[in-house]
Image (cartoon, rainbow, N blue to C red; front, side, top):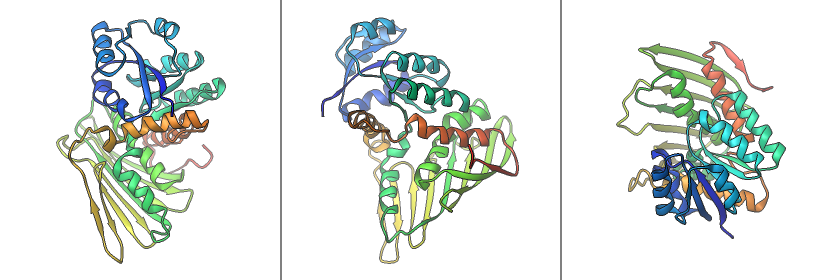
Length: 318
């Protein structure tokens, strides 16, 4: 496959720690880097790309032969840049969350549709070793129909409850949909807040009949593995610990697998595979996994929990 010619907007610490190191795992050719900080742009371009760098994105767009642009920065400053880049005729790949709000996510989805360009959100946990293996097992006849899903996603303190939900818990709003393979029909939210930190108990009913529970909290410690997912089928069940360890329980015998060699490895965490999916979708002219249109459902889920309404909330009609 011909490598996808990409430019990169942003060369901050998060991008250099996550997406830049994963570029070599995907069929992409990093043509140039742009960052307002010239030293950061020069450093990232020299380490991961051709060495060409810019401090003005318009100059990069004019001088470089690009097919797509990776935009890595927070959701607030990123929103206008994504809209501008789509309008300029480029496919776009961004970190999670898709946007600062549900309304702005819908704006991005409309822009992607209007300009006929792919916009993919890097919900990399979808592509992690454990989640990919769980999805494979769930497709087998022996697993049967999904009946119940439990997700526990707890962290240390955040600056605000909203920031925790949008920056951290958003992963499990997304995984709860992706693993179930269905949208949330109804949910019920209970919330506790102490010292500006929040804990949530969320019960959900999916469109395929399965039920689920999410345990979310910013009142724990950072120094621990914080992903725990239990997936129950008619005849078997799966337990995921972290992003790359899983336990598969069956009547005939159990399987256990884990790999903790490098907790930021782009293959284990899914960043490299996510980038590859972005390229493949463009080359094959199809919607990618975690497209902006699919991620609207994740943001609807997030928005419902953010409102912290007690009682049953229906998402069936959007």
